[in-house]
Length: 415
Ligand SMILES: Cc1cc2nc3c(=O)[nH]c(=O)nc-3n(C[C@H](O)[C@H](O)[C@H](O)COP(=O)(O)OP(=O)(O)OC[C@H]3O[C@@H](n4cnc5c(N)ncnc54)[C@H](O)[C@@H]3O)c2cc1C
Image (cartoon, rainbow, N blue to C red; front, side):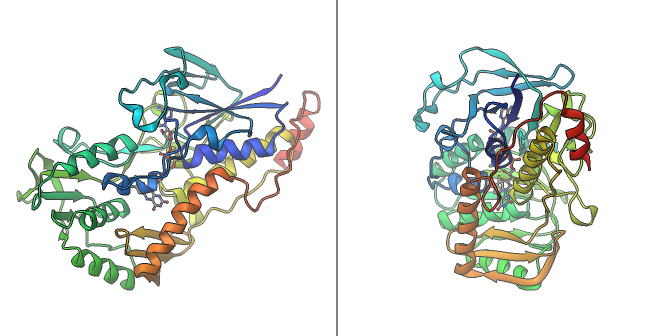
C-alpha cells in the first residue's frame, strides 16, 4: 500500500512542500497529490505589479511538476474532514479563463469528489481581510489574490486623469501598492492612509527613504488615521473626514480561509492552524499546516508573520519532518529566522530593511535602484525556489518504513 500524501494549495508553501516531499521519498512508497484551483503558480508577491498592468511570467504547475511524481488536481477544496481523513474537492468552472490558455478539461471532471489521505499538508494560504469595516466588501478592491488584482487592473484602466485612488493600510502590501500605482499612473491622485506613522517599523534610514520616494511620487499620506467606512466615491475616517476615493484599495492585512475553522483542528486566535516546531498540527498528528494558514513560533517564541519569508522554510520543515517520520530517519530542524524585509517602491526604487532574527529593524538598509534590483532578484529567487525545492540540500530518497519495523523507526525518529 502506498502512503497517500495530499497537499492542499500550490502557493509558495504548498508547492515547495510537494516538490520537496517528492525528492525525499521513493515513488513506489508514496503518492503525492497537490490540489490547487489555478493551473498556474501565482506569484502573489507580484500582484501589485499585475494590478498596474504588468504581465507576470506564466508558470504552469504542470510544467513545474512534470516528471517529479507529484500528481496535480485542479480543483477547489471545499471541506476537510480530519476525523475521516478526507478532503472534498469541487470542480472549478471559471468563465473567461481563456486568458490563461487553459481549458476546462484540465479541471476535475466530477463536480465533487472526495480525496482520502494518510498525511495531509494544509497550505491554503490567506485572502484579504475586510476587517468588518462597513462598505469594504462592497466597494473596496483588494490584491491578496489574482482575481482581485485583475479586477483592480481593469478598474484602474477606466480611471481618467486626476481621479483619486486611496490605498488603505500602511504595511508592506499597502506601501508597495500605493507606490506601484503612483509610478504606473502619475496622472492619478494617489493617497495612502496609515493608522500609525509612515514606515514606523523601519530604521531611521529606511523610514527617511520611504518618505522621500512617497513624496517624489506625489502620494498624499494620511498618518494616524483610521478608516471607518468605505463608499463608492470616498472613505470616511474616524474623525468624520471624507477622503475622495474613486477607487479604494484595502490592504490592512490577510485573513485565513474559513475551511480550517470548520474542521476539528485546533486553531489559534485569528483562525490559523496551531502547529508544533515540525509544522504538525497540535491536535491531529496526520495533519501538517504551513504558510499563511498556520501559526508557528519563530525566534524568541514570537509568531512567524504571514509571508513567503516564513512560508517557504515552514514548507521545508514540514516536508522533511513528514519524510523523516515515514522513513524512520532523525527528525530534522530547519532554522526559521528573518534577515531582511524587501520592499518594492515601484519598479525603479526599493528598500531592503535588514532585521534581527525575530524581524526587528536594525540600523542598516539598502535603498534606491540597487534595492529595487535586489528585491527583483528575491522575487525571482522565490519562484525559482518553488521549482527547485531542495536546493543546497542532499536529495537522497529514503524508503518508507514498512509495518513491523515501524515502531522501531518511530522510536528512532522521535529521538
Ligand atoms: C501584493 C502582495 C505582496 C506581497 N509581498 C511579499 C513580500 O515581498 N515578501 C513576503 O515574504 N511576502 C509577501 N507577500 C505575502 C506572501 O505572498 C504570502 O505570505 C505567501 O504567498 C503565503 O504563501 P502560502 O503558500 O501560504 O499562500 P499562497 O501563496 O496564497 O498560496 C495558497 C494557495 O492555495 C490555493 N487555494 C486557496 N484556497 C483554495 C481552496 N479552497 N482549494 C484549493 N486551493 C486553494 C491558492 O490558489 C494558492 O495557490 C505579499 C502578498 C501580497 C498579496
